[in-house]
Image 1: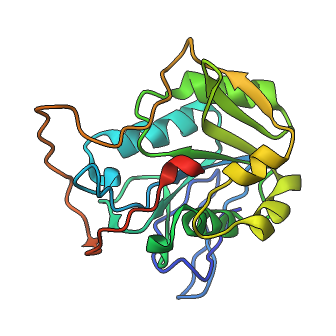
Image 2: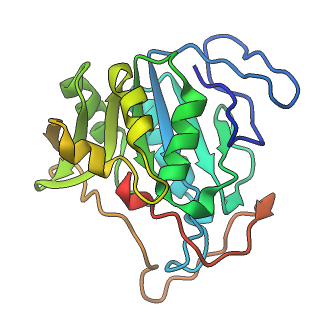
Length: 230
């Protein structure tokens, strides 16, 4: 279930097996799904030189990895920039994105609510993580708290069963993502180093010139929500 939250001010039609219900501001958009994917993509990308959500191909890859990897619905948390419409994706705008990764994650999880059996958290700046990684983590995790690791290094996606959502929300700070909570709880590490590097990209490759996708709104800020800490 993806529904509106206090952080959310703009929404696009949501994924689902039936048309979503919509209403005016403050209403809800409901998606009934066993597994909901969230792409955290609210940061300004100050080190990269542009919001990473606007790097051509990255958002589509992240959404595709979740969708093809087993998620019944996918939401994208935006902040510094809002990308052009992406069909079948619920856009959750985090008005306080500049406060940090925790604010973005809180906005996404609050929007999902308690209607999903589990939430799969991914980030927009790990473009080599594909559906094979998501599928493996989901298959191994079942109803357990889990995350992908790459040659033992923690990465994404992170699988959050419904049981853990409320405690995680209560523990979140604006600055940190789910990392501190995961370190304090026993989670299943699913090795995926044979499928991807899982590395987040903070700076563009030498010589690379990116032409960002047009955005409907871009915040002027040098503060980046560090999506790596989810």
